[in-house]
Every structure is written in C-alpha cells, then in structure tokens.
Length: 97
Image (cartoon, rainbow, N blue to C red; front, top):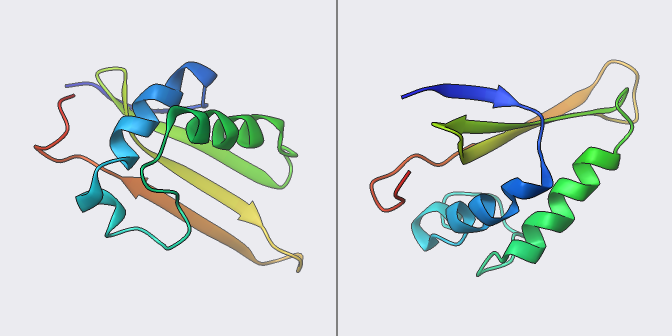
C-alpha cells in the first residue's frame, strides 16, 4: 500500500463523498458535515480549498493507493501566531480502498 499526502484535485470529490457518507465515520467527526455527504459537497469543499489564500490555508488530501482516505487543513486564525489544524483519516474495513 502506498500512502501519500498531496494537494486536492476536483477528481477527488467522489472518493471524499464515499468516505464521508459512512455513518460510522461521520459519527466520529465534528458536527456540521452534511449527511449523506454527496459528491457535490466534496466539489464545494475541494473548490474552496483550491481557491483559498495559500498564505493562510494549507489543505491536502491523504490517499492510499491513489484513493482518498482523508484530509488535512491548516488555517491561520485572526491572530498572527495562532492557527487551527483539522484532519480526518478514515481507514476502515467498511470502505473498500
């Protein structure tokens, strides 16, 4: 198995939707994600990450054998020395990868 961290691509939306539409995965993530998570939701998220200011937001897909299994977002906050790190790693037997 080859795992990578790389920039998001709009073609990742379907894989992201598959991962985040798993109820067992969603039950362990922060509130606010739509359920079921649709491919259009993935396109919206990825588009916003790709268009974000690269000096303020760093976003990456986590893949295993070229299939999305999660993501990482690091964003600066209002203060010059604070930020937020969010990540999701969804590697479970219920998802075929």
